[in-house]
Structures are given as structure tokens and as C-alpha cells.
Amino acid sequence: MGTDVPALRRGLSVLRLLATKAGPVTAGSVARELGLPRSTTYHLLAELSAAGFVVHLPEDRRYGLGLAAFELGSAYLRHDPLERLARPVLRALITRTGHTAHLGVLHGRETLYLLREQPPHPHATVVTDVGVRLPASLPASGRAMLGLLPPAQVRALFPGRDSFVDRTGRGPSHLPDLRRLLSAARRRGWAVEDGYVTPGFASVAAPVVDHAGHPIAAISTTFRHPCAEECGETWPDLAAETLRAANDLTTRIGGEPRG
Image 1 (cartoon, one colour):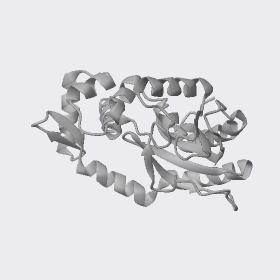
Image 2 (cartoon, rainbow, N blue to C red):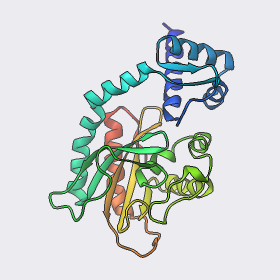
Image 3 (tube, rainbow, N blue to C red):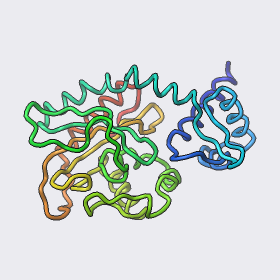
């Protein structure tokens, strides 16, 4: 059992890494990003492939998630434990702030919204509804999670200018822009966006992390902020409430709350 547990953890780390990629990757890339010996990496990939969790593309010499991994993902969506844990947290957050709150997760280079809770009389409808996907570089929730990923992983997700999407004329347009925003979010403890997704709306977001400090979701608060240009505001009071909610959900899933 003592030797099986580390192998299991390494296998899970491989699956987590593949889940963040936009497409199949080489074994060498997996080994470098996880800091594993190549021989160990090939052994893990072979075992995961035999179990159906990884698919090997021999012509491309690359590996991607297999059918068994997607079956697990489908089972997760049926049981929705994260949403069940997050729903009361989001409801408490909107009671404190009076603004719309969201739960989002990273899906490749996109943010996928799993939950949206609104106050009884919302001021307006926002585009970030359940099931909506947005480029993770634009919403505060996406950048709250990206900011906790290794730089190499962020670079792999956004390798060039064509990886960036412009919705409103604001937001990062290349990797140095994104890195600057991620660095600022890490220093503050929360991410902000001002009209990047929808003109006239802004948001703040904080990451939800697991026991290893890996970002598995983000909670965001969205509110009206009509402004002709970015004002540089970071909304610390509202961010404090959003961070409180993110830390609450982090505790519920067994993670270590952030400051």
C-alpha cells in the first residue's frame, strides 16, 4: 500500500494536467510540467491508457483524456457536489452584497459557469449564466484561477495573440498583458474586471482551492459600473466579501483558505 499511494497520486496529477490542456500533449511535456522522470511518466500514461482514462495518439506521439475520464466527468455533472456545496455560500454572499454571484471553473482556456445566484430584484441581466463559457483571460473569475497556475501552464493555454478574444475593446490582448493582470491579482488576493465581458458591468473574484492549493473554481460578484474607460478601481470592500465566500467554499471541500 505504501508504494501504491504515491503512484495513485502521480496518476491523478497526470489526469489533472491533461484536463487543463486544450488538446493532447506529449509525454515529455507531462514529465516537465509535473517534474517526473520520463520513465515514470511513460509507465503512468501506459497504465492510464490501459484503464481508458488516457488515449494515446501514436501518429502524433501525444496523449489526451480518454473516454473513462469523460464518463467520470458526466457522473460528476449528474451528482453536482461542488454546486450543492457552493449554492448556500453564493446565497449568503448576495445577501451581504446585493449583487449577482457566480461559481465558475476552468475548462481548458475557458471559464465555464456552473452556478449563478441573483438578488430578488437584480438591476440587470448579465451574460454569465449557467453553462456559458467565456475566454478565461477576460472574466475576473477566470483570471482568479489562472493566477494560481504555474507560468508554463498559463503559457501553454495562451501561446499566442490568436489565443486571446476581444469582446468589448478591453482586456488582455497578449501574454505579457495577461501576466501583468495575474501578478496584480496574486498580490491583492482577488481579480477584477471592468467592462471586459459586458460594457457597463464590472466584477471581482477570488479562487477556491483544494488541499494542495490548486484552483478548482472561483466565486465572483458582478455589478453595474458604467464607465467610459477603465478607472483602476479594485473594490476592496466587495472583494473582501467575495474572498470570504471563496474561503468558505474552500473549507467545505477540504482546502486551505487563502488570506
